[in-house]
Image (cartoon, rainbow, N blue to C red):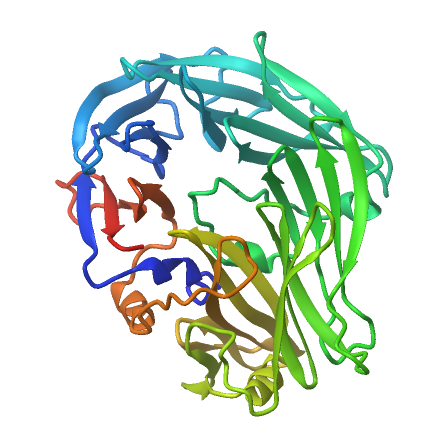
Length: 462
């Protein structure tokens, strides 16, 4: 599904330029962690997820404002005290002293690798052994802090959230109880919410999300019914204020669409705002409200023969072996009807880039072709046991930073073609380097004699 929902990639332009860093780490190199260094440059942290000769391997390269390597520290072998042989990265953070990356060992150990800003020398320490009865959900970043989250089950329907932060003696823990029942039985994948970082859009499709922003953690349950259901969708979320330790459970209805009772919606939290896409049998709309006071900042819908002026891209719905172009609101609503809608938001220059779309999966028993979503449509294969397919679509709009009106800026519509032709790997990440959107990914060697390399593709103007 990732290849369908590459909305994050529409920051591409024809004039994109690439820079390649070839690291010294000989094997098992993972996706790099990139930190702004405060001087319009960046620091790149490379690491191996497995021990070599009893040590954790890492390397640091520093880039200047032009994206060129200005300093590089040789490969460092850091002794591992806890005995773990493999590592999973949880989150990262930076402060005035240096750069910090947090890992979970194959056991329940949490490690911190810290790098000095001036010397680029790294150290590793064992922070904490998470109790076995706790389930580590993952890590998220908020401002200059890294938060490590775990879930502890109290009963079948009740659990509590433990929030760990870096302390002088290891990890400090805060415990939050009184969470809604839906949190106990769901699988959550915490979302990275640094303002200058972009996520893969399929993270927004998952109705179970965890956000962190402006001193608060949001636990979201947003599984809305389709328009064929009589249930009205409600955006449900739990807000945890880390400054006051207050837990609040909230439900926000989707915008009312007059006399109609059957409609669907999807929501996303970004910068203390709630973004909601909604539609029923006759109207399709986008609403933005303030999480602080609930006031509506933006609400616009289209209906009937209205052109898709709310959007800033062409809308193509995948069909079997073909794409169908949508030009009016009526046709858009008809195609969106069976789909679960989604929305996600990221920064683009001084505007908000809002990805919209929908998806569904249909399955039937018995033999027949099995069709899976692929770039540009539905891809068939065969299975004698079942018949299933995924349908998905995605498009976007651009809103001014205050979220009170649409932006006049429009991205080049030919970008989508370039995305499909570029075949960029889907395990990279977007960052902002010196005001320029940059896609970073790991390029695997074609020949055995070649080394792995980290590729930075810069897209001036975005």
